[in-house]
Length: 424
Image 1 (cartoon, rainbow, N blue to C red):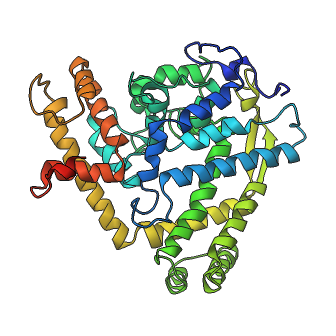
Image 2 (image 1 turned 90 degrees about the vertical axis):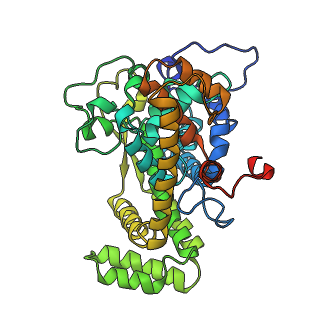
Image 3 (image 1 turned 45 degrees about the horizontal axis):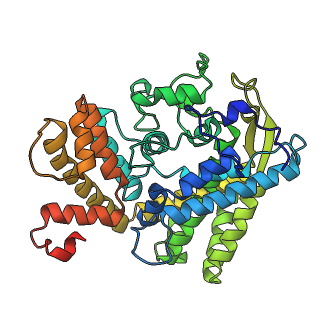
């Protein structure tokens, strides 16, 4: 396979040297992808909430199927851009394996119960450095992916840059921003990702710095937007949360443009004709073809081509995606049924965290009830601060699948849950 001139040694570099193997048939980005796919963190996504609790029905999306769909869209965008852009060609192209790796790993850090779980852990971890899904993804990739040695996968600089949607450190974030940050102790990986170059003055912490993204990260972000703006609607329709009558009532309460009304009419027609899946899948293709590569320049452009281009999205498709997300939010996520589940998720995770906080965080107790796995308990005993102990407790909770969180809660608090079969 000829070399891809789009990338250089700078992009392939890892924080620690990788051992070389004779006859290696994969490039560094393919190694990244394979390590992600074969990890337990990736497998756990099959039992983590996307829209509805995993296991509710067998055909709704989970974090795993969502990540696979995002990866497919991301690879297709790469192919489309190579075909359409004069700046790309057979020997100079955005690597689809790298984009696939970013897409497959973008939700690794999400805790059980979807965004409700993330909000709860963010609230509970405020005294200890916060919790953020993207920061947790970085922590998994760099520190905890291989749990046996509590080590990460030593990812390439390009993959880290492709995953890092946010580049503001927790203690630097503006006070009015609830999340969208990295943990304080992740500054060394951020520094490595940026080629150890300081951010220019105009990229202030917060929105400006978080909007600074490599071309692969921009592709991943739009692929993610495309997937959940269309597929969350599809799942909402299949579950009965979105139907023609509810959608028409929703329209009456909104101030919509003529283009928005036309898109709602398209959606209503698809529901009436029972052709939702096919029609929405067609829109995925339109979102892929709505992308365009445009030249740009910034403080990393001299170091890598990954920062010489921006992804331009057709405003028509951006507006449609925003409309679909608004429909999903109002009719699905803000429905009493899902709000009740969000309340239950908050209650469960709060009680789990509080009992572990008393046992492991606020005071170090060499002896006591063993509520966590022995290996994690040993690490907690070695931790030098409450923040470090809290992060280890948070790691365990965030790694839980929906069902494991339910079972753990019941073992701790449900007096009727405790036969020998309940502990398997």
